[in-house]
Length: 428
Image 1 (cartoon, rainbow, N blue to C red):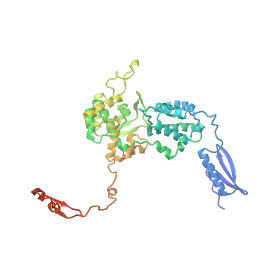
Image 2: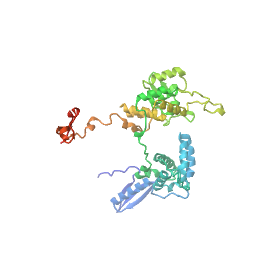
Image 3: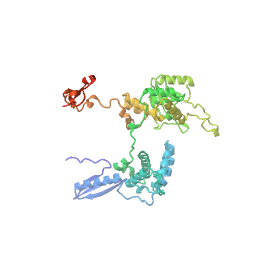
Image 4: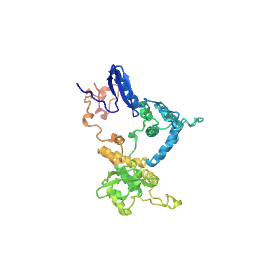
């Protein structure tokens, strides 16, 4: 007799007992049973039970009236997030301005996909107005403007992260953001087209801007545009992280809010030192001494905390932007941000040169290759020769009869000597 194959743990089981079939499964750590008249019905019942268990719809419903509100749960969660996330201030602001007015008085079990869709639609139309903020009298001259889809998407992702913590605490069994249908997710999809992002398309323009900038901004621009570093990473770069002999830069820290800290993704990376950048850094090392930070503020007394007698430690980003605006104007180039003129220019030129996009992901420090693939439209070999000749059909017209101009225009005055030599081709 063939031995019956056992089902995996957590998948339940069915067994024939007398004239009926018994169904067994686990729910909240306890073993439960049911019965069915035949094997087919038992299998369908077990599949439905396991499906409901995965969606959290089996068993006793939690007491919604006794559960804390999301506003009460968000306070401790944001306090813990302050110690673990660099962008906790931005998260607290999004919760206070956008999420709390709409969801703050709700209990965890009351939030579903329909409520989240209403929040998305409200933010796309009315911006900062939530359920807790009654609408003010509209102004005819200044209509209410909604949030950008990308901004709404950041709020939804923060709400999903918050509900992941709520699920761990046992207040709900399913994250409602995970149940959103595709139609709702399309509403807050970013409408930014990476093909419209500007950058320095000619390497000659990179040279012109570098020569038009004062020091140390010129060297900082060279590092950003030839190594692809973020602005905060350029400011926080140390000589201990620059290996001139082996042509490598070890990026492991950044200057954020007046102090050195970990990188945005908290993972260090190695960046190749371009041949054009190596002599610039070697000269800068001789000029500055080659110890400490690569770039020191020219006027430490400007900035910092004068009330405590603490001078400025880092170059201010506003100084870089101001110098770049003057250099672009002097070179007759359109205005660009520091990010577009440096990091985005490096990534675009890398792809246009036909280099490996996976290595570009490691150099830029992107956590996902999808982010790096935004530059793929600049690839030199986007279509090969066979794809460009996929429709090999001859659409040229057959040649017609060539007649002199005089014969084609009998009512005109006699042509001149120059017109006699011309002819008009009639296509058949």
